[in-house]
Image (tube, rainbow, N blue to C red; front, side, top):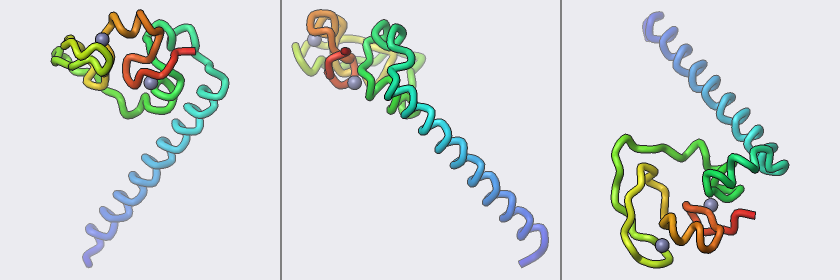
Length: 106
Ligand SMILES: [Zn+2]
Ligand SMILES: [Zn+2]
């Protein structure tokens, strides 16, 4: 193996290590926030349960375009920018539940 390649490989390994360090740190912070419900007001406003809000937030993305979803509860279709929304606004309001998974907000 030539020296340039060896240096390149060391760089890739270092980058990945840093990436995972950040991932672990974020996860630990999220767990801490979860146990304290640190952003409760904002969480309730966004209609997300504790698990979805704190522990799955790194997995969530929003699209720049709305897509059609079928509500898990009333089976009516609705539009959302957020690809993970599974419950329509009406059902969320009626049952006071998470718009992603349907868990109680409190
Ligand atoms: Zn619904
Ligand atoms: Zn949820």
